[in-house]
Image (cartoon, rainbow, N blue to C red; front, side, top):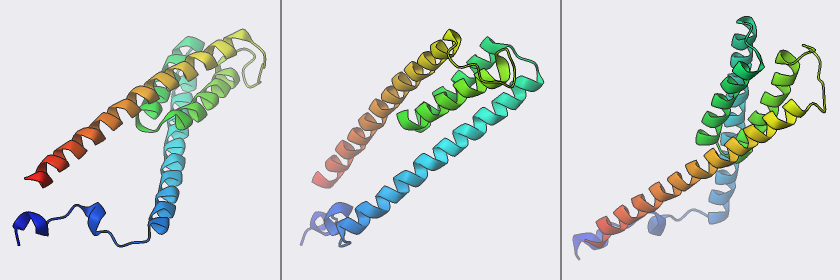
Length: 149
């Protein structure tokens, strides 16, 4: 028997029930999504506190929120970034737009901020997904080359 026959990829040696594996992956994904949303909302809370204590105006706080949304879209995904952008728009409206500590629904600035945040979340999350897929493909090609020897 040759040595290359003894080494098999993990997918061929797995004997676990695929339904159980899929179910655990499902809960892992849900937990990862919840954790990313939690970290993102915590980041928004820290940025809000920081910006409010330093008496930032609406555009300055908006750019800080945009940084949090970009990081969330990069490491999380579109869903997490969308939740962050909704929270950011609500925080901008409540803490930085007159009247402060009140929601003024219907203002054009809110809609512009929301569209800008969502557009940024969509673009960054798609670019991050594309980069992750290319990385996965490159790793799979590398594994295939290794096992074909």
